[in-house]
Amino acid sequence: MDISPIKDTLRIALVGDYNPDIVAHQAIPLAIDDAAAVLELVADYDWLTTSDINSSEDLIGYDAIWVVPGSPYRHPEGALIAIRYARENSIPFLGTCGGFQHAILEYARNVLGWSDAAHAETDTAGRMVIAPLTCSLVEKTDDIELRANTLIAKAYGRDAITEGYHCNYGVSDAFATELESGDLRVTGWDDAGDIRAIELVTHPFFVGTLFQHERGALAGKPVPLVQAMLRAARG
Image 1: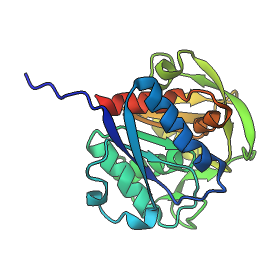
Image 2: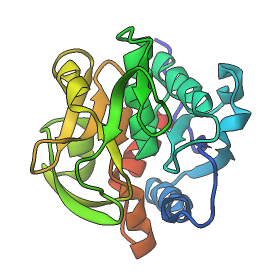
Image 3: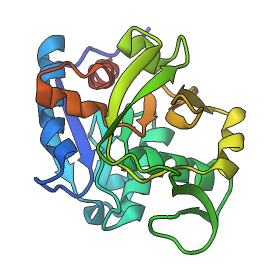
């Protein structure tokens, strides 16, 4: 039986348009470094601007892909290419905020066949799967209920969490019903029942959150989902 060796050095692709003024971008390296230290491995990461990703070949060699906050992206198609590559090749994937939104968009277009699936932040036509939130979540903190026995619940070790946001867009009501069946499952909700986290159940590790859990690293807190991503990437 072929058993792949456990990797002690990982290569992580951070897909997004780096901006030192974005709080999440300040937090992400700290979150990765802390998680790597806990797991006693080395995690090297590269920031890949969305405009630099034009095909799946630009992602070859990475052990995990994190599509980071910071939308609207300069080249949204680059983010979608990265998400599709991770989904189709069982590469551990994490999407936060804009990464969560584009994971929904990629799934709608390439799995459900909604070729006109659209994001209201950047599109003016099509079926809006990502729409403006009723109430802005820019610099807000809220409670999230997690579905039991999911990757995210196992990572946190509990079924209820409190995390921070910086966003104005989420899953549209019209598309939310499409996620009630199928392989992309809703795994986190706020108190009003709005979607805050998703997982692809046919994938080893494919998790998206509207909230920016990585921000905890700025306060010196461990970031459970980053640890879980690196653990999945290590094998």
